[in-house]
Length: 80
Image 1 (tube, one colour):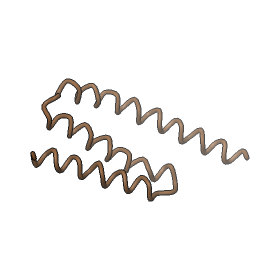
Image 2 (cartoon, rainbow, N blue to C red; image 1 turned 180 degrees about the horizontal axis):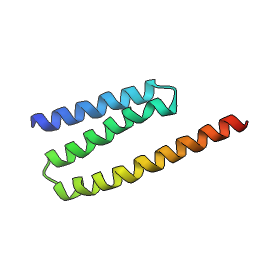
Image 3 (cartoon, rainbow, N blue to C red; image 1 turned 90 degrees about the vertical axis):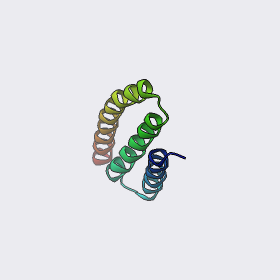
C-alpha cells in the first residue's frame, strides 16, 4: 500500500474518532476538516486528481455552510 494513502486513511480515522468524542459543535470543526483533508489526499494518492480538485472546491463551500449552521444553532440556543 502506498505510504501517502496509508497516512491519509490514518488521518481520516483519527479525525473521525476525535469528531465523535467532542461534544461542542464548534470544537468538532477541526476534526471534520482533518477527515475531509484526509479523504481528499486519499483520492489524490489513488491518482484521481480531477476528483480531488473538485473535492477541494466543494470542501471550502461545505466549511462555510457548516460555520453558518453553527452560528444559527448558537442563536437558537441563546434565544431558548
